Amino acid sequence: MSRFIINIFTSKLFRILSFILVFAVVVFFSFNKLGVQEINNADEGIYAKISIEMQQTGDYLVPRYSEQPWLEKPPLHFWLNQISFKFFDLTALAIRIIPALFLVLNCLLLYLWSRKIWNNQSGLLAIIFLIISQLFVTEHIGRTGDFDMALIFFELIALFSYWHLKTGKKWQWWALGIAIGLAGGFWIKSLMIVPIFLIIFFDWLITSRSKKLIKQLFWSFLLSLIFISPWLIGNYIFLREVFIHDFWQSQIANRIKPSFGNHLRPIWWYFWFLSWSIAPFFYLSILAIINSFKKFKKNSVPLLWFLTILFVFSLVHSKMHWHILPAVIPLLMILANFVWNLAKEKLSLKLASLGLLIVGFYPFDAINNKYFIIVTIIVLVISWILLNKKKRAIDCIVNALIFGLIAGGLIINWQGIKNNVLYPQPSPFNELIKNYNGQETAVYGDLIHNVYVIDLNPSNIFYLKANNINHEVIINEANLAQVWKEGKMIIMSKQSLLELPPQYSTSKILNQVDDLMIIKNEHKDSE
Image (cartoon, rainbow, N blue to C red; front, top):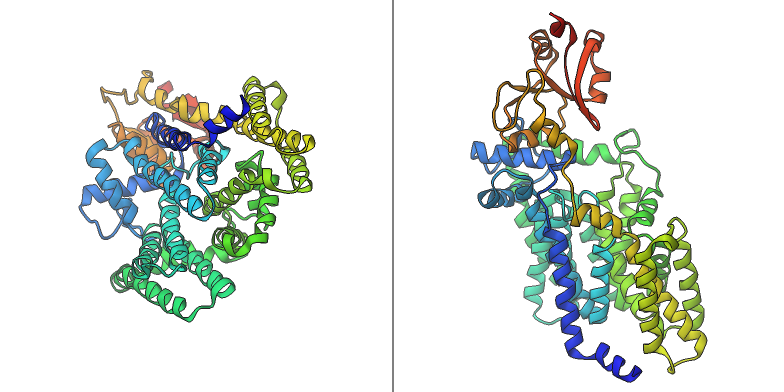
C-alpha cells in the first residue's frame, strides 16, 4: 500500500497535475471578485486619478495629478492602465487587473527559477507559501492597483537573466534580459530598481570575478541606461523645477534623512513586518536562510537578493511595508527549498526546525481551528506513510510532524483569504453614497445635487468619479466657506473635521461610516 502511494506522489502525471492545480489557484486567487471593493488605499486612488487624467488630457508623456505634473514615478504603469480602461472602463477592476496579471507572471517566474536552481517541488511550494499568507491580502500586493507587482516582475526578469548569464550560454539574450529587467523596473518605480544593480555586482564579486562576465554585465548596464535616460533627460530639460522637487527631493533625498517624519520607524521594523506577513513560518525561514549558506554558490543570487533589499531599506529612515516586498520572493524561494529537502537533513536540524515552527504558532489559537486540525492530521498521516520504513522511527515522527504542521500552518491564514479573496465585501461607504436619501445630497443614478469633498483622499475621489457621482473637490478655505454658507453636503474624514477652524464645529453629521461622514451647516438646517 505504501509503495503504491509513493509511486503516485513521485509520478510525472502527479507533477503535471500539481502544477496545473497550483496555477489554477493562483489565477483564481488573483482575479476572483477583483473589482468588488472600491479603491481603498491612498496610493491606489492617486494612481487611478493620474491614469484618468492621462486619458482625459491625452498627454501620455507627462503624468498629471489635479492638473499638475506628477513626476514621482515614470509613466509605464499609467500607460498599461490606459489599455485596461479600454476593456474595463473607469472601474476598480481596471486599476487592479494589471497588478493581478503581474502577480500571475511573478508566480510563473518564481516557479521556473526555483525549478532551475533546485527542483519542481520547491517552486510549487514557494508559490503556495506566497498565495496562502497574510502578505497576499495586504495592499500593494497583486490584488490592489499599486506598482509593486510590476517592479518585482522586472526584478525577477533581471536576476533570472543574470543567473543564466553566469552559465555562459546564449549570453547576448540573457544580457538583453538583464537590461530589460533593469530598465523596466526603473520605468515602473524609478530608483527602487537600484538594489538590483547592487545584487548583481555583489554576486559577481563574491562568486565569479570573471572578466568575461563583467564585460557582458557592462553592456547590459549600459543598454539599460540608454532605455532609462530619455525620461530623465526630457524631464530635466522641460520640467526642471517640478522634476527636481517631485523625483529627487520628495521621493529620494527626503526619505533618507533622519528628520523625515513620514513613516519614520526603527531599523528592525522590517523584521516585525516579515514576522507577521509570512507567519507562522518566519522563525523557520531564518533557519532556512542560515542553512542556505552551506551551499552559498548555488543559492547566492536569491540569498543576496533577500539580504541586500533587507539591509538597504532597513537603513532608510522612512519605512513602508511595500518597500520590502521584493525581499519576500527570494525568502520564500529559500524557505520552500529548505522545507522540501528537510527530510534529507540531520536529525538535529529537523528538531531545530520543529521547535522554530512550534514557536511560530505561539500567537495563534490553532487548536480551535477545525480546518487546521483536519489538514494537519491528513498531511501527517500521508507523510508517515511516505517516510516510514526508510529511516529510524524518530526521524519519521519528526518529519511527519514538520510537514503536518506546515500544511496546517497554511490554513492559519485562511480567514484572511476567505474575507479578502473569496468573499470580499464593498466598504459601507459605497452604500452610504449610493443609498443615502436624506437632505440635499447625491442619489446614485439620479444626481440631484453636487457632493462636495473636503477629504482629499484620492481613493474617495476616484470612487465618486468611477461611479458617475457629481462632485467637486474643496481646494481651499474660501471655497469651503462658500459651500458651508450655502448649506451644501460635504464628505470628509473625522481627522479633517478635527483640523477645521472652530467656526465649522457646529456641523451636523448627517451620516457616518467608518472614518468618513457627510456633514452640513447646522445653522443653515435650522433656518
